[in-house]
Image (cartoon, rainbow, N blue to C red; front, side, top):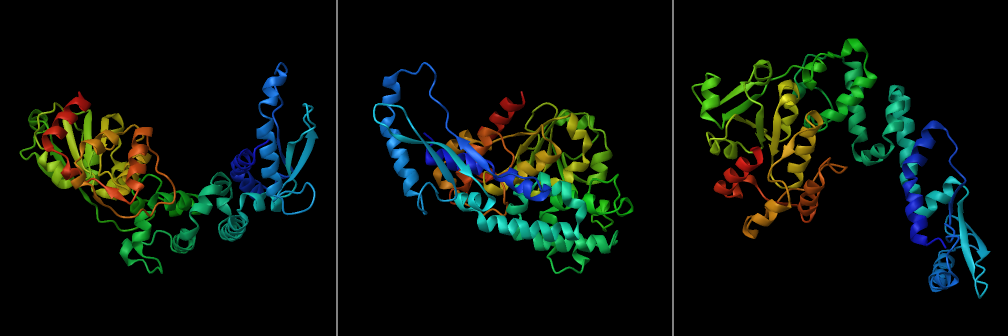
Length: 393
């Protein structure tokens, strides 16, 4: 017996491999789903107990048939006698003989056609992306709404290497915010298509790496420990430094917390947690933190809002610092928050799920339901201080 739902589940699991085969020219079909036999010592009573299920499954298979005989909706099934008391016919093997049959069954004919057209066009323009395309077949489909703009940006940098302009000065039919929002993807693709002389490989900041002018941002710093502040020789416990200055400086601490909201950051100044340094994340600008290599040696925490953007930013931060732990971005924090503080956030622009822990994913899925949001400033400050102290200790 092969339930129809099982056929679909197994067929859908082949989808990435089918897409890869399209790019590599490998043969994937015919492909079969076979029935697992009864255990050798299975008693007749146990076999008889599933007869009703076998019969129901046969009806379901037949109901999906659109052609006479053993031809199903996108597949062919082979039947055999069960050998039980009544000679029941049972599907033992399901065969997808061709790509078209397979696509028909999983209802992805249009998706495959789009993938085929997109990859043909993309690789004709940028043959250097062939290996990347094979490794990222599903992403190519997920990014379909963005590809025309991505290709426009790639073509600009290929024909205008090291332009020595600010992002907002680029004469593109694409808003430059699009570049800022997709900087990691564009960086990956540009590294593959541009010659070495068009890339400053020693730089981690996108603008400097590809020859753009760059207004160096400031990162706000707060000391959560007066002793650490004095050790660093700082008069003020709250100040800002350019990214490169912050990156070059030696900090006598191994504990850092990055906080998305500036008001929240400064309100926690000098809360008395030994050796703890606070930095302002400033939303998606956490991408700038990639230049702070000394953070790799720190016990690192990130605290953002509980909304889809907050988790996307956390995922972005982890691209540079995979060891970072989140604070107050879990189900326990949601349950701590009074319902009157649960607000309406903004829809997500991301096409794939962010890289999160199981606990974070649970909170992320909660936020996805109606774009719910809990902003940092709505959490009781005394409870926050108590929790940070326990987490860090």
